[in-house]
Image 1: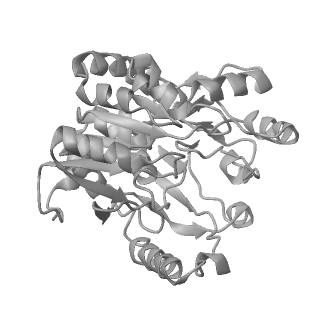
Image 2: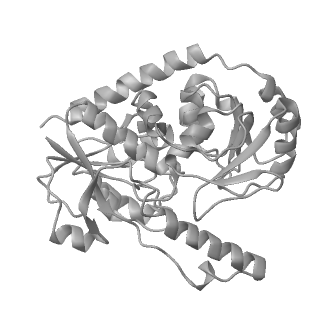
Length: 364
């Protein structure tokens, strides 16, 4: 049986590619053929993408653009992708890729803050096609009332719907009046051996082994450098700032490293500690039992739903620091032991439920 997956498989973001890889590997493990529908979001380049306020900013913008050009062809080479590229819904309707079942997710495929992209609601499929979502995310659930009807119309055609966050589950159950399943991120569906094999024969550019990994994706309204100085002094290790190509935040007096998905795994797996703002940096820290702290801004005065849904059930949500400097809490977390055996037991329960959801909805 053949399954087509629709997600952000072509983004130059390590977490996006690795969640796609994990879902595909799980489907293959279950005995299905699985490939990604090669629909890609348009590149929104403009004059602002190349010209900054001053010469250093302009140079930085061009460096990031060339990083994007260099990495975009090989960044997702670990995935099995349909050979035909699709630029929009029109092209998908004209020559619809043929599968027995269609899955959308995971990642923030339904994060419709500004405008609904109904391609990720399978608007190109005829009503007879079997479709469901796995771990789709609505971000912070900032969906306008006028968009609710359109979303409801498309989702009414789904065999089943599963999401990653409790808030998304509550939101969709309210507007659709049907049960919504809560599942784990795909990266938690498979054993870490699937990720370890991506590191075989990889030459990793690193001159030291005793280090702290940093993976910060968003600007935060406080001085992160203060936290970085505290963690370096406490752990007595060098620091590597992991950067996605094309978009990244760099820090002074730190080894800033542009990485691909395999390198992302390697650096986190071998870290002494991880400082991050990313869901997938947290997940891989948990997979490899690496202690971590999450530094976050509040989004529209809301907590980060993705991290809350992951960490609160396993008792680790306190490892998130929001909005303001809290050096006392930060120092306490640096020295607090994480009981990994207990965490693994709780995550296994979530994984079992999530796999059951997949198996049940993959039936013809």
